[in-house]
Structures are given as structure tokens and as C-alpha cells.
Image 1 (cartoon, rainbow, N blue to C red):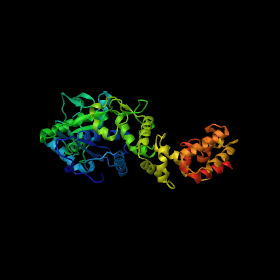
Image 2: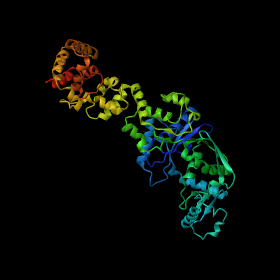
Image 3: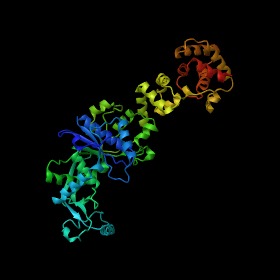
Image 4: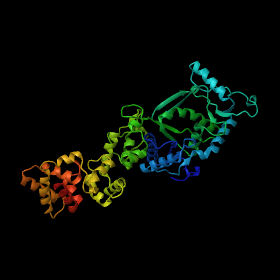
Length: 478
């Protein structure tokens, strides 16, 4: 997804075409990732195409860092596209061309109102407690009335009466009176297109058949349809798209999603929270879409099952604990060598992937994220003398060191260094000493790991290996 797409890349007519169109003014946030996912799934389910458009017309706020982060986040989630990304900023000439077509055909007009006039108009509307919208003062005037050389914008001539109903695939039938839509600007005085115009032209030229986006864009649909219908009158073959406006995501408390709820960039869930891509994919799928009581749904199942009929009308609630619970499931299902590579990258210098791969079956059992796997693996690479937590040090007080000396002696005579044989030897010692196994396991865990939590103590012994395990026991028994 590195190079710019040309319109000729974007596919034949007669098939479903969706698009994800982020603005690169920030990273790929959780709401955007879900929108991308739903577009991707809908196209894949129907054997269609899904496209990526970078809406980078806000040159002051758009950054290459954000573009890179968006594309990297989509790649990480496994959302591939059927053409290289299209950059909206490269298409300003095409957008302007459509604005002039609309003007020539009488569907748009030149507006010479000055900023001062428009501000006075808004002040009057505020005083009268009216909606703030352009009053159409240049709609029917002759442009010749303006002094020569006066700057102008091009405004769309929207219908004044009647209403428009959109049969939205998620929201149902939604009707808006045309009088509520003012004659908005489609081409600025400097010749640059506005967002409303650029989106419509790009969707048409890309062959987009289904516009699936957040319901905060529902009002935009009523503003964009007049352009589509006017161009259909002029050229033909400008059909209305199918709209599906999906509810926004709220926090676990029902309030608007914010950073305190976990509304972060996708890369934060990967890097900071240690979430696997398949877990986030599954969680976002279930955030506003349902299929019975199924919680765990694979990528292949999602493509087979997903359709817009399953998208709910109510806002869904983001819950980081539920995401981590689901992530725990995918950790347990994941390939051990793959997890070892991810964990080794987090540990950095000194990590041993082969050892981590062997340890992974016991490390991942109770972990909810990669960070917990890293914490659980720390004992494998600890250097002697081991640093002790406060609780671990307490387990080595009293007669614990004497017990450790007996454990060391018993295990030193063990030739079969497997968890099963080591467990049998230790149990035999516990019976000989008349102690419960826990009385031996607790000081052993502290001596071997420096903590009070770890995988099963006999797995710890086996993974550390005979020499290292006996050396750690001897060190604390002294």
C-alpha cells in the first residue's frame, strides 16, 4: 500500500465497492479501525472490492507520520486493499472540474459575498435565534452586479422545497427537509475544493457503491446527494450510493468515547497493551455487530457471516477488560514460536527465542496480554544474584533456607530433569519431612524466580535447566 492509486486501478462496474477514507491528522483510532473493518468485511463477503483513500486535503494538519501510522495499523489488522491508496490532495483539478460543470449547468452559482457580509448575516441570525446558514443572497443575482475582479466562491444550488429520504442500511428511512440544507461552498475563492465536493467526486470516480461510515456523517449524506443527483442530470451514470451509517462507539460508562476509556491509536493496543491483531479484529467485529451469542469469530468466519443486517442502531460500548479477556483466548490459541518472537522483541537483548518457545505453553496459560507473558518470562533470563520482591524475601525467612538445603540435596540426585520426575522427587521429600507440598513449593518459587507468582514450580525447574536451577536454590539456601 505504498504508491498512489490511479482511477483506472479501481475496478469494474457491477460489483460491490467500499472505501475507507481516513483523514491523516492523527493515528488510526479505534472507531476508524472498526469502520475500516466493516467496509473490508462487507466487500469481502460480497466478493467485491475495498479501497483506501487518504483524505489529506487539510495540508496544515495532515502529516506523513499519521499516513504511515494509518497504513501500518491497517496492515497489522490484516486489512488489505484492492488498489494502492488514493490521495485526495492529488485530485484537486478533477474536483474543480466538477464544480465548474455544476456552475455551467446551472446547479451552482458564483457568490461574491465578503467575509464581513457573511459575519453580519450570522450575527443577525444569532440575534433572531435562527439556524446559522447561508441565506442565498447571490443565488439568483447576476454575477455582473459584482465589481470586476471581486473574489468569489462557487456554491451548490440546493433544492429549496420538498424533502429527501435516505433508506439507510443501518438507520432505516431518514428524511430531511431540503430547506434545512443551505447553499454550501463547493469551490473556495482560491480555487480549492471543499470536503463535501471532494468526497462525492472521489466516491464516484472510484466506483464506490456502498458508503459505510460513522453516523456522525449522516447529515453529510443529505448535503452530498444534491451534487450526485445534479451530476447525474448532467452526465448520467452518477447513481446514489447505498448508505450505511454505523453508530459511534461509547465508553464502558455510556459516555462519548475518550482517551480515558481507551480511545487510543491502534498502535497503542499493539505496543502498550500487548494485544494481538486477531483479538482486536474479533473485538471490533463484535463492537456493534452480532451473530447470536458468538463471541469468538475467526477472520474466515467473519467474512462468511458479516452483513449490514447484523449492525445495531445503538452505540456500542468499548471495554478494555473485555478486549483483554478475548485477547487471552487468542494468546492461548496462538502458535508458540510466533508468540516467542513477539515476546523476545519486547524483552530485547538477552532474550532466547528457542527457550521462550519451549516455555510458551506454560507462560501463556493465564496471561491476558503480551506484557503479562513478558513478566511471566522474566525469571528465565534473570541474573544471579536474583533480585527479590518483598513478598518473596518473606518466604525465605525462618526455617525456609534449611528446607531449601534439603530440596537442593534431593534434586541434585535427580538424573531425569523433567517436570514429571522433579515433581515426584519433591513430593517424596515432602512426605519424608511431613510437610505439605506448598511448604516446599513456596520457598522454591521465591528462590528460583525472585517472586511469588510464576508458572508451575516444576515447569520452572525444567525450563531453567539443572545447572541454573540448582545454582539458584544453592544461592538462597546458604
